[in-house]
Image (cartoon, rainbow, N blue to C red; front, side, top):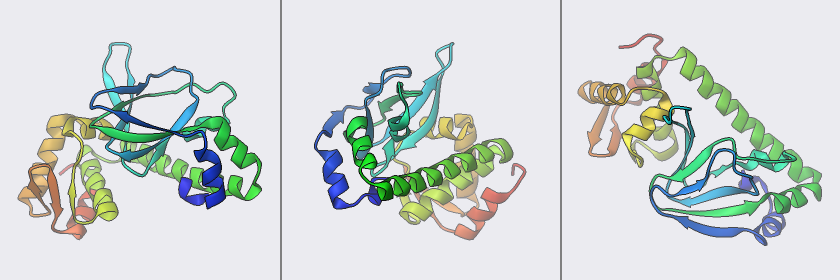
Amino acid sequence: MLCSLNRAELEGISRRARCGHLERGEVLFRQGDTAERFYLVVKGHIKLYRLSPEGKEKVVKIVAPGATFAESLTFSSRPRYPLSAAAIDPVDLVGIEFRGFARVLRSSVDACFRIMEEMSVHLRTLVDEIDKLHFQSANCRVADYLLRRAKEEGDLFNLGVPKLVIASVLSVAPETLSRALRDLNDRNVIQRRGRKIQVLDRVALKDAAERESAW
């Protein structure tokens, strides 16, 4: 999202920004905490999650390096974090104060429209993800996840986070994720090398992601 700002605007919000570090498993904030900042991940991965009344964790999103999260709370009068955030692995990040960010936006109509455009793209992405959860089979969601990673990072990429976390994001059972990866590997659509995935056939992977029924 910050890529849409110019140099002067970035300098404006950086004056009160803070760099931070989290060790693996360390919690950045909890659901319901008062919010004063949104964050940019520089290194590592953050999981955004909710806990059920029974204490069961549901990972909503994995935030990778270069991505921001919680920025929409800038426009809330009494912001509180709707999710909890914790480090999956060692994380370096930058916290950007809502007030400084809002001050920059108030000074530039163009900046406001650019940020609104970025947020609308993010909203469409979230709607697409909700559609996939409702209308795709579990195996399709796994294939679609691998396809998106390949488009973003190339045909050879590291899963980067535990499979248990990925399974939670995709709303599939861990054993379903393992079985789907094994099936794709056996069909020579992908090749697994430990935690690395090599996509061998993008056309077949796209076909697997678009099927309406399970394999």
